[in-house]
Each structure stands twice: as structure tokens, then as C-alpha cells.
Length: 473
Image (cartoon, rainbow, N blue to C red; front, side):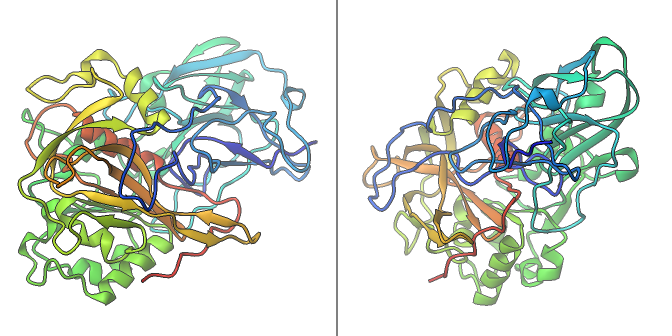
């Protein structure tokens, strides 16, 4: 049988099957001036069918290409030949359905869907460097469309498992496939909302500082990782993540073992408001953050917590007024979505999710969105070059997902990155100039949707060893 070396797909990361990649779009650099040019068009369809193989039972890697998110198919190429539909078994059935978030409302694009009769390896419990895993060439798979829908060719019969994955969100369901068309119930294809390996459900282990404003925990709850009350706030005690007190003076970040239990850590805007040494970041703490990300952790900070991006990763960006980057007053911006697949997902959302009412911004101006409560500005994001194992220079610097003008900056008409992500070693860090959730409300507004998309997409699995982290300083 033949072997396909890589398949480009969109996903969040893991030792399982769906993987994300290096960069989602090109960005300007080292000029201080940013355009609103969208990411390069991707000539792929998110519901293409792919397959993979190897004579020894291991097939190609499912991974994200360096040009951005996309999908894979059997003819994407490979050094040892290509998988073709001739490698597939005779299929007499089709599975169709839609992958939703744990809240059963938000469709998930780029999720991996396949059937197997093999044991599915779950998600490691704690930070790790994700390696892509190969599928046999006779295992068809699909990636969900922008609206979350899928149609998967299959072989009828019992003893199979339906696997749904978006990074560390992984669900495995026993299924009997009847000949012909099979409609998959939404409660069998949705992303899980709890860590329950015995029931075939894994989610990312998340640590989030419990602070206000910028209550990221409310966004996670509305995604389905907790219950929300009538005002849209997390019901205490229902969260499927760890809340870290913002009165800990940063002690949690001084303990790398504690940090390492999480796949993702959030340091929202007001986290440091009670910290005596703020905005100083001790070097030992900054090193812990680098070590955590290098090991595969995902690190997220927003606006007034900019020092928790700048101090650990100073080579990657320059803030407006770098000696005092916290901006007052907050500004509102008409921003432009830069990433083509983020835009496609936002465009595919149903009308009720595009306009949640209550005076919140809508998605009716795409590719433009309104971002509120921006408390910092970014002058530039830098090209950060490191050499990979093949001696090639690789840019691990930030991608801009959303860009817009900073009304509180001197040059108020210049387009600046507003939501960014970069890579360091085996992990990722991301930052937004805007708060994600400060005024409690039902539903998810545009900047909350951008946050959720980014945390699903910025993870990575590596078919080859990741490039080493760049020198800092």
C-alpha cells in the first residue's frame, strides 16, 4: 500500500488526529503600519474526504500546512506515493450530521470525523508536546464544513467507533452503521463538555484566573464548559475548568509543576490588579511561562495584562507607548477579520448567533466587526526566524487574526493587530488588545467568538520535531 506523508487540516492539537499549524495568514512586520489585507485564499474544501496508509499499519500525518488552515485529501502528495480511493474498502453507507460545541448551539468548523474499529488513544492529562498520529490509508475521514456539517463514507456494520475531534476536545462513541444513509444524532457528534475518559470524552485542562472585568470564565461556560444563569454568568461550581484566584499574587505562575497540569492558561485583563509588584514580571516567573509554552502549553493574555506577553516574549511584538502600554480611555474599533477560515466560520453562523441582541455588536458587517473595551495597542509584530531540523528558516512570529485602528493612539487611523498568536517551542501564546467578556450577557458577541475560534485553532501537533524556541532578549 502507498503512503501519504501529510494532510493539511484545521484543528487544535493533540496526540490524536486533528492538528493545527504554523500560521493562518501573512502579516506586515517591522514597519509599525498594518494593512487590513485578509489571509491568502485557501483553495480547499473543509468537507473533502481523505485517507492514509502504510504497509505497517501507519499512514500519513494529519497536520496543518505552513500556509494556513485547510483540509486534506487522498491526492495531497507525499514522498512515498499517494493514497487513493482504491485503498478504501467497499463502502455502502454514509454518516451525516453536524458537530456542535458542548453548548449544542455553536457549530464547529474543521473538526475531524472518522470511523475506526481500533482503540483510540485519549488526550494526555497535562501539558505535553503534541505529536501527530497517522491514519491508515483505508480509513476515510472528513473535516466539517464552516457550518459544522459533515458527510462521511462508511462501511456498514457493528463494532465501530465514531471519533469526533477538535484538538483536545475528543469524543469517541460506539456506533452501529446501517447500510445507506445514517443521520448522526447531535448528542453523539457534539464536542464533549467534561473530562470523562470512561465515557469517551476528553476536553482541554484549562486554568483561568477568576477576575473581573474580563470574565473569560463566562465565555467558557457559554461555550458549554459550565452552566450559565439568566444573565449569562457562570453558575459557580458547574465549571469544567480550574478557577485560579486573582489574589494569589502570581504564586500559581511561580510553580511550573502547577502550571503543567493545564493545556491552556488564561491571564485576563484585570488579573494583576491586586498584585503588589504589578506590572513587574519577575524573571523567574517569565522563565516559567516560557518553559510552560515550550513544553506545549497554550498561553493567553488580554489588554492590561500585556506584560504577561511582553516580558516572556519580548521579541515577538512591540506595544504602543511601550514604557506604559496600558491605554486609557478604552477605545472601540471597527476591526477587520484577517484570517480567511475564521471569516468563513463567522459568515456561516446562523442569524440568531450573528445578532444576539441586548445592544451587543453584530456580525452583520463582515469582514468588519466591532471590538469594544480595547486597553492597549500594538505597534508591530515581528518576524521571528528559527532554524528547523532540516536547516530551513521558519517564522514562528505572530499571526494577526483581527486588525483595526487604535482610537486612543496618536496615529488613530493606522491598522494594527488586535488579536494575535505566535509559537514558542511546542506551544502557542495569544493576546488580544480587547477584553473578551466584561458586561454579563446571554449569547456570544463577536470578540468572544473570535476568542473561542482562536483557542480551538492555535494548537499544533508536530509530525517532525518543532523548531527550537528563539533566543529571548
